[in-house]
Amino acid sequence: MRSNLRRELEEACCAILLACLIGCGTVPSLPATFEVATSATETVSADAGTGPGGLQGVTLSLSRPVPADVNPAPRDASIASGPYGGLLNGQGLQRPPLGEPIFEISFLGAKAAMNEATHNRFFLPQFYGETIPVGGGWVPTTIPALTYKSVSYGAEANGRFGSAVVVHVRLGNLYVGKAILYSWGDIALDQPSNVMFGYLLDFTDGLLESLGQIADQYPVVATIVSEAP
Image 1 (cartoon, one colour):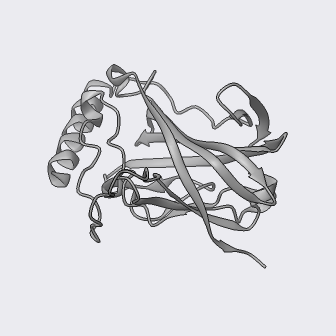
Image 2 (cartoon, rainbow, N blue to C red):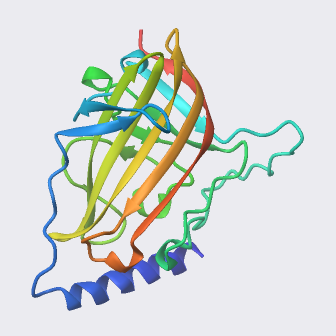
Image 3 (tube, rainbow, N blue to C red):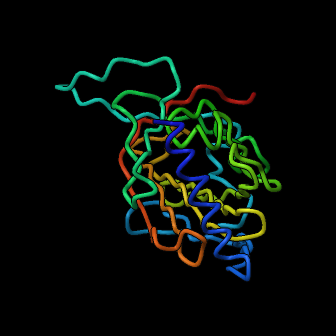
């Protein structure tokens, strides 16, 4: 399934590229500021290259909680093979199994900025790999000429935190679309709780504009796995 999804994306990109050689949308700049959600109804303006101050030096593991009356799916040690196969059909990305770690996110950058996501097993690892750097220049994917660039935003307010990463994706010099990955929750004594995780895939004005916008969010457990001294 993974090879089929990759082949379909490569074929779609090639077809769109041929159709757009005479001109498609240029790649926009990543925003200097971003309205970071700290709840479903509240936002805080944050500068690029920032993160929640209480998470400075922290690495979190995110996983979907397992209700008390539900048995989690058996653990599979291998990387998931194409769990987001509905993406090219405009469907939401398949949610990771209950209890399975989604990835680890590290806030090791200056101003508590998120600097990378590691152990990525479910967010398109066949394209982005198991380690996804945040910030810096354009990063190659496994698809030839398909690259991405990202930046971290984050803030705390009234006992709550918000974190977001905005990602721009391009094929050569042509704009494909953007992704926004975000989380929010309570934070007390630098310990997050009641955390919500979500994403928005926005193909508006990009090569795959017909896909529109695809979004989802769900609660996660955020466990501290390491802290810088």
